[in-house]
Image (cartoon, rainbow, N blue to C red; front, side):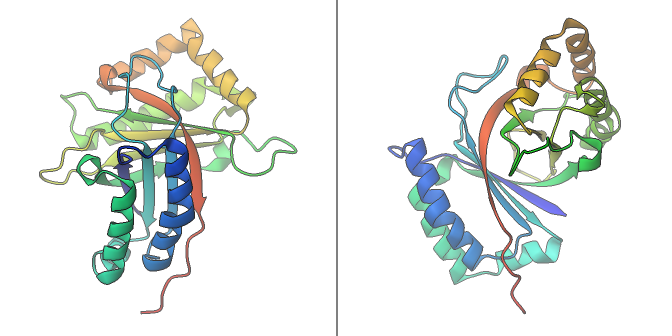
Length: 249
């Protein structure tokens, strides 16, 4: 599975509500109609005022768009889309500042739902809250060592200490690692995403993080992996498109 992450900045003068309305009502359906080569398609809109910890006062993007492809051939079809791709680019340019946008090709790791917090009784629909985190690896680590240490070490630590009852508190938990592609300089080495079924689960997560013992465990393990000054965490409102039927070629 190949994943692309696009960091998009709204054009000057487009308010958040207008951006969401126009993206969801116009642009996203156009992408689904003209470029239906993806397996999943999600837009996560930054929640104003939700930056946590020592993050900077503002982010350089307003929405994180995520697209998944089954393989390189599926992604290559997108590059051959021709006029359809141009129509999408024109639509995108009406919403976003091209000079402030970036697309990053990534590899994603997903914790199975069977290992996470089960859906609460009576809870319908998607998880209520989503957090996104952009992090950089330590300068002395290779990408390969970073991915291995995160997946085999830090992930297990987080799942072990951030628990509610017998399960980790997350409804969903994913790590998306930027690929090494010559010349590009993505603003993250890993995008970490965590979902919570309810606000109660989210408050429980915050209380765990504030616990000095748990905080010390996480901080020690983070120091072995991350440039901790780079950690940027924020809340996002997620919108999901059902995958379109794949064209017969």
